[in-house]
Length: 381
Image (cartoon, rainbow, N blue to C red; front, side, top):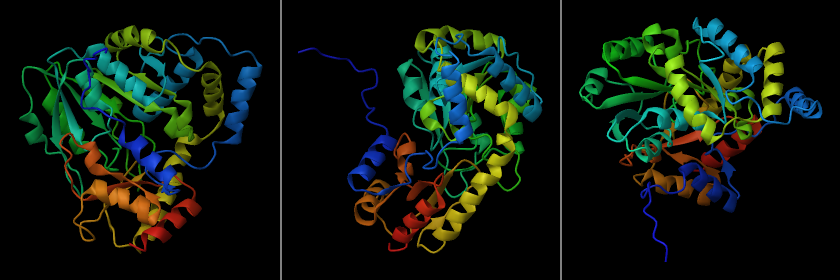
């Protein structure tokens, strides 16, 4: 019998797949996995069809179509006053997760230490470990998930290679403040520490707040990979299209891996997205679009026994059930599916140690009718 020495012996199926499968088995309303249940803009769909009919069906250039990269450069300059060279500093990727994987693959070597703020999106830690890196988790806690930068400083060693950021944050909906950025600049000054900034929810920031992209700050920009997603932007998560920004020196290493990982990504969709974003005011409309959903969902949830945690960005609402039950969050999440027909994600799944703060995450990127039906069931708890 063939023996396999697993590189990730403790990693199983992602929590998103587990909860979605359970939701399907029990015919539950799925507020666990982060995808919309409403259609993408029909105009965008037509543009993809047109691109295929017009012959855009072969390999795109390895870094992505230049026209799309130029559009991204223009957008990044407008939003963040950051000038990225579309030829050498922007690469189109097969979604945000592939960009994260590729950035880590490009620079993490055995023994390198990577600081991760938890609860954290579940691809960070396994990918670091896959390339021999050591994860240094820094735990954040409900209700506000604030970062104590003085304590973060104590995690620094001679082997600290990278800090991974995620703002707006999945799963908590928290965002980095300007004070956070200033502390990060101070912490990394005169070091070789790199930053991987997961900003796939960059346009989902609420209540008039400004997204604090690392691209806004030259001191951070020079040491950072910035990851973005068209899936989140255009309600097309299944298309798996995103991009990475980085200074040329870092992007050169990124592309060395990218070319042997996926080489290039979906050509007709790149064409369509480029044409769509030229004429549509997508960026300006997104914050209000999702804030309306957040406000609607929160108003409904106020009628339940759950305690609402702050949601300043992204499309996830976290709730505490500490006053309802003493059971584990994993058990509570399973019970919600089986007994009440609503799927969530237990936030302990986003901690290396499985830290259980009695918090569940719901996705509100859904039709109002879907959210309404879900809360009708949650009220019964």
